[in-house]
Amino acid sequence: MKRILVTGKNSYIGTAFLQYGERHYPEAFRIDTVSMRDGTWRDMDLSVYDAVLHVAGIAHADIGHASEEMKRRYYEVNTNLTLEAAGRAKAAGVRQFVFMSSMIVYGGQEYVTKDTVPAPANFYGDSKWKADQGVRDLADETFQVAVLRPPVIYGKGSRGNYPVLAKMAKKLPVFPRVNNSRSMLYIENLCEFLCRIMLEGGGGVFFPRNRETVSTSELVKAIAECAGHKIRITSMLAPFVSLGKHVPGKTGDLCRKAFGSSCYEPGMGETDWDYQVADWKESVRRTEAPKAGSAGEKTGQSEEGNTGERGQQSEAPEPGSTEERIRRMQRLNRGEDPGSAGRNQPLVSITTVTHNSEKTLARTLESVLNQTYGHIEYLIIDGLSNDCTVDIAESYREKFAAKGIAYTIVSEADCGMYDAINKGIRLSHGTIIGNINSDDWYETEAVEKAVRFLEERGCDYMYADLRMMKTDGTSFIKQAKRQKIATSRGWNHPTQFARRELHLQYPYKLESLHDDFDFFLKVRKSQFRIGVLNETLANFTMEGISHERTLKAAAARGKCRYRIYRNNGYSRWYLLECVLIEGAKFILHFI
Image 1 (cartoon, rainbow, N blue to C red):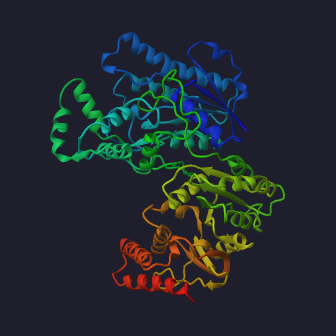
Image 2 (image 1 turned 120 degrees about the horizontal axis):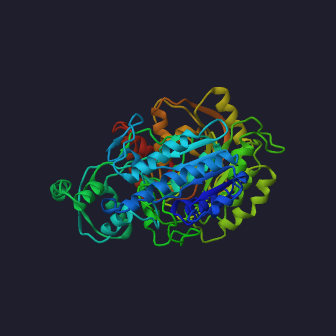
Image 3 (image 1 turned 180 degrees about the vertical axis):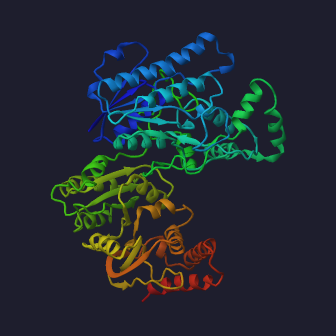
């Protein structure tokens, strides 16, 4: 367990990181916070800490009206105090110093690349830049310094530009359509980034940001939709925005800040691990939700302020607890799982999505628990079930722990099955990903056979034979085939196992019940290698929406599949394929 000290007690980022770490990485970190308002922090024994996260600082004020005394204060806190904290940490033997710098060091540049030279436009940016340079000068082999230059940070309870924009989005009837581009960073994405970088213990300059850029108009529209407010985004107001940018004084500054571009080039912010807890639309939904359902939702005012672009207030991130996260990062990935047969084998992450699944979940859990492959982590992603689903999942915690399987249960609101699967993949750490639904179950050697097949054949993606369980108790085997024509007739999604990079490149789109087939088609058209194993790996229950036996339901499914074919570039002749598939399903129920 690493001991972390956060400088900036009650600050937005500091509080959010503390709560996120305690909730998601309880066995990884012991996190303390300290106020730097007075000098008592200098009496602390820093030698007991593995890392210091320095977020204390004075954030954006009304720079245009700042006095000389205020400017001096910026340099005292943002520069001098930062360098003193870093120097004391190094002298005490702390191995890592993480400093929250800011995109503000690049001044007002609209498009920042890796080659862009920082050029602060004001004393606030300059005070951060001098600290940015100074802490990096202290780095050596025994003292790793990680400098983060995030864009504007937002989330529930944040302060600065985002809440001002949100207030406008919820009240204005119209808003200008402006095609600007802005990089932003959701607070939970930042917290996950911080956890990952502290697990690794490395240094360097980093640019954490949401994967997507967004225009101000898109952001306002998304906020308004979350609030149930109708707002019209119109190009008719764009000329007034262009004019406003040239108005001198505060009005012009606000126009340029709200409607100007400020983004990092594509690729900046990417790491070897995925820290995108939520995409930008989901992050807006979480930020604007009346109740986040998270611990520590109410927090104190920012003590020293924070970096990002503006000082912000605190919020606890909301995804559910993951109590075994460190064990799987440190113990499992090193092959140190006592009694595990998975030593030096790839870690396989298996996700099961649940919602009111109390009648079938135990069978699914047992099938994962009894796998012959030993290097597994298992994630239950529940959509706030109101039956005994979560209780049943919790009852297996000790059983999975006894077998050395890292076991995570998350129960929170989601946007459907594929949103939950995407979430499970983001939370997982395996190099191979599998998914088994809560009414289906694996054969005992399923994971072992899948891993062996992938490794021996050098495949990136595989699927296998599937036992189809009918409602009358009879069954038949649906054989897996690699067919020249793109079809689901020979493809069995409960048996699929894929390399992690496929899911990162092609996340489920959250468009329909057949997002998994869309994923399959994308993999087929890619350069990834596909393999088919003709052994039965899983059992599939022929119930639910995908097998609803009405002509209306069959027609809806066929129409949806046809749209997926067309979206992936397939011809109109695939309409016949959709009709045949749904017709076969309909007939099978009566045989």
